[in-house]
Length: 227
Image (tube, rainbow, N blue to C red; front, side):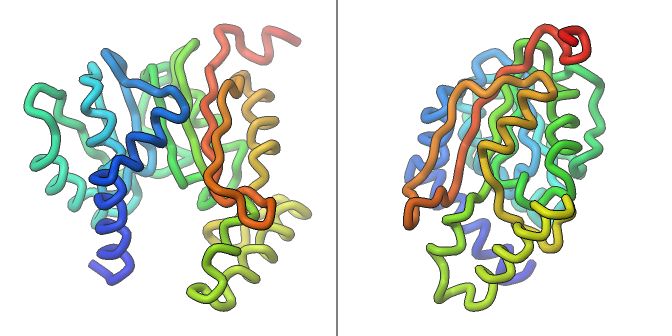
């Protein structure tokens, strides 16, 4: 486990303990009561713990990082409510999820979109495993995100802005954590038949969104059927 892993895990469970994780769900009016739920990019499992309090029918978390999954198993076993379903944890990564079409009522994917190679491909895969009428909740970093950490990141903010410019011009992500325009994300969602219903932002920096959250509902009719 690296220092980065350790700091990330500590911060994730600090946010869970302080109620921040639950407030993020509440801001989007998300609940998992009786639902089949998938958390993509579950990390150390703090969001799974928050979702478990709604007593879902099924709760699954996937992540590419084996260290995070091991941490999730350890923390969840201590914190999950004894009347709630035990989450299943699997190693997987966008844009290839090991689930059948229309498997889940609710799919969450927080702070993963900035890291995926292609936004449309990733969102299409998330929509594929979601049932018609199901809910997709995602979040990512906007153009105000690096401004909060100029001293800590040093040259990283410049790299983020340059990577975002390159992505906007040629459609390829140069580095992880490429910044995004949430309106563009919403346009992609509409194009694949997942309609944004709620958008929430944290505090803006110099008028720019630092982190965005989007709740969207999958249409009962595919985009091809409406053409």
